[in-house]
Length: 441
Ligand SMILES: Cc1ncc(COP(=O)(O)O)c(C=O)c1O
Image 1 (cartoon, rainbow, N blue to C red):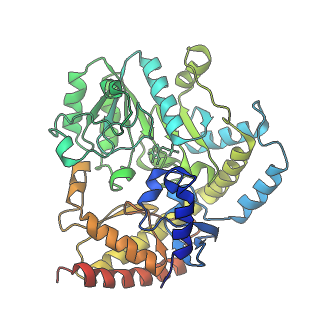
Image 2: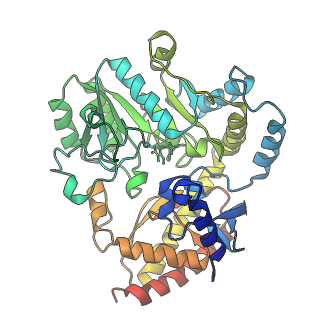
Image 3: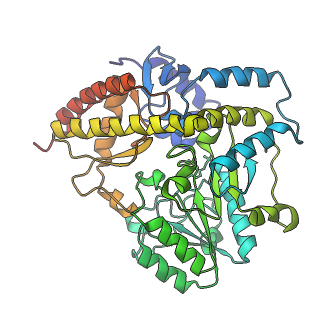
């Protein structure tokens, strides 16, 4: 049981006097208590007050091998003695590109960037150039980074969404150019008939249908059976490219991403987070023709840190670990996650707390609702956000860190013992929650 976060609070106050907002990403300010950490090993993190936690945030996703993984530490130590960047070619680029090619079905060719947002920007540009069409069709609730062209209808409020059959394109930020929404059309996800209607209305103008193949950013919602194949078919019929944003699903649901897991191959895919195991790296993968446009098709793309050896050394270690024994590490992560999901379901039922879990083992989501488990973005409006915040805070007090929006990431480093210990702590948190908010029995 954690009693004090005094040092973290003091450091946040000090930080706010120099660092805008006191945190390096405003999303992090939403944590129940913005903590300052000083170390971590495996699945455990230590904060500056000396508290230890079992972590299910994985730094918002990248730490798929856990913290301070011995092979990663060793390799990066060696790599750090060589130039951190060349701004030119080196063999690790080929090594990592070949690894991705062998793991990811759509990866005839790859390109390296540094963040998921950048990878999405390149995917948009490649799709528009390849089709000579202006529009990107995206889905309500899907997050594709914070760039002007991508931040549309990410988390629209209930009063903003418009009719389900023709959702409004809602800008996500002050200061964003208005015409971002003019080049984007929005559809509800998991609704094939509506998608077909919207594509018909915009015939010949849609460059790409872009989606998170599992809607991880708004509730870890799974695609309905057959939905991804249906979208693939619709895209082909309309001469539109299919883009999977696998920044979360990639190297997590399966070593070949959601595209291998569900057996549906997109034309372009973006990767980030887990691909580097903690180093900053993102990837665009796609057919040779589409990717060649950067060299002979007039598509401009750049990046000082693209393909830097330090990031690629991290990715080399991470992908080696994830591809060993035909993806055993990710099978383990997903198995541990499934066990955690089953345990949480059972504990919440014992306490009479209405809770639905959605997602897959290595990434899932807690919905405090007595309605059916959500399957589309708008169903998330039924979630009791106050109860979620109470729960996250109670779990933190017990020494369990979850993502501040109710997401849970499970890594290859979580063991059966970690899961058992976590379930015990979560049981304590639910008991407190039932006391504060009341159960339904
Ligand atoms: C699906 C998806 N795409 C793109 C991004 C943007 O990635 P980054 O934060 O590295 O820019 C994220 C980030 O969370 C994401 O979840």
